Amino acid sequence: AQSVTQLDSQVPVFEEAPVELRCNYSSSVSVYLFWYVQYPNQGLQLLLKYLSGSTLVKGINGFEAEFNKSQTSFHLRKPSVHISDTAEYFCAFSGNTPLVFGKGTRLSVIA
Amino acid sequence: GAGVSQSPRYKVAKRGQDVALRCDPISGHVSLFWYQQALGQGPEFLTYFQNEAQLDKSGLPSDRFFAERPEGSVSTLKIQRTQQEDSAVYLCASSLVADPSSYEQYFGPGTRLTVT
Image 1 (cartoon, each protein chain N blue to C red):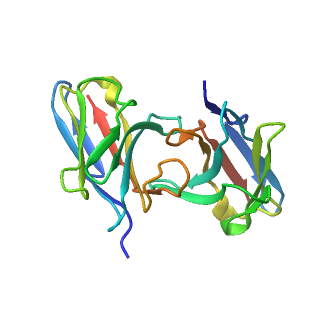
Image 2: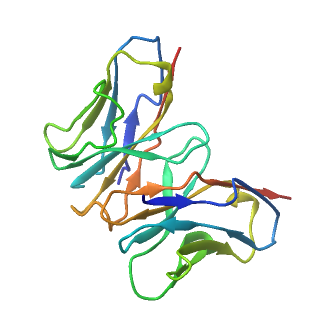
């Protein structure tokens, strides 16, 4: 079965510290990978996506992610977080289906 | 340059009532998707339209759920005889291209449905 696992449901981190949000996927076909962010009472906004090419993908707001095919991972990273990064982050993939989402990771940035 | 809009933003329904949720996609977007997001969960796919054609409805949880997009623009998700387990946020997304798997989807703010 195709699925996405976000290993951490909550990640607290101090302002200006680095952060990594982990994502692993399971699929029998080649996939496209996405990270979305959801601020309170708002819809999902695309942070970045991997379709093909370079495995290191840069997105908005200083985030980046690296596709690792052998480990079936697509971890999201930011070298220095801000208070405004507090939100829910969703990893998702699509293979031969519409988007399959993980359960989300709540990033809380502490001043 | 409006994004995807959804109405109502909040809906409270008594168990057994019918509800209709509306989605206005970005103008010119070919594909339209509906997702259900339960509390503390990620969005789960319900159904997908390419223009007015409903190409995939495999995610609809029961025959009480029905979606339409008659003119290939606005879409309505209808839930008949609502049950408490239908309480969730219903998200609509649209995409410029026809391929449902590879391109960016733009999400609306969602409709929070509470069934009492």
